[in-house]
Length: 336
Image (cartoon, rainbow, N blue to C red; front, side, top):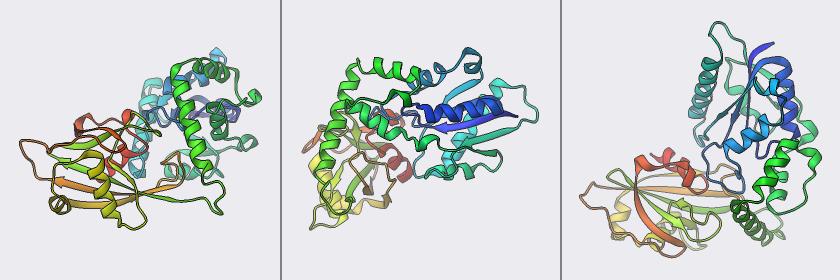
């Protein structure tokens, strides 16, 4: 028996495959810590449900005695920085353990699918025992989530009753209609490339523009991510270099009141960001360029243009992942 078993997942949504793992964890441990990933992401087609909604799916699927032994805890994403993510997991587990035990020598384990494509994280915690479980029916949340947002009939045998109830209530909310429209847009977008012999890989650029503790952002005017804040950027044209594409997109979307020569002189760094799931539209690799201007009493003039509803300077202290498009919060953190 373990004192604590840790189960890490996004549970978007919580399905019977997850429930099977949780049942095995409860059978082998006094208490179970459910670390719910992508905790502070904006609602989108990959992360439609909040931590509280996913916690309800999990806890309401259990008998009262079992639910009392399960502790749901939010876990932020830390893309492009495994060391920081490991630290975040360790701190989350330590927080729950300190609340639920009197200390002493505790046996802690990490439960998951060793053969899953994303299971490399199980090897990042040598201080904990690793408990391998089979992937029940090779079940994945992705097709269930996609079908739900596209309005298709779900196979309810794959979902605990508590999850079904949460999904039914969620479908009556305006936010579902917005996510359903986003899902339909992405589905149509992918259809345009469905006849290609190979799945396409898109190349984009993003501008990280800094001055005096502020960052230049835009509000997206169109789908996907309509209404979210984003870095100025876009797709690379066939006949331009990456840096030229970045400068063009920056000028089109923000009308930044800085001469192009000054802009090139302010270039400090560049980096590739290629997390496979970073964009719902398909495999998209972005090249980010960081520009930093010397401090001044006034920030340069900006105004939204092209597909940006608005452009604005935001203090770095006010950055929060809940309102940022795709992985832009993580790009900014990595570049800083």
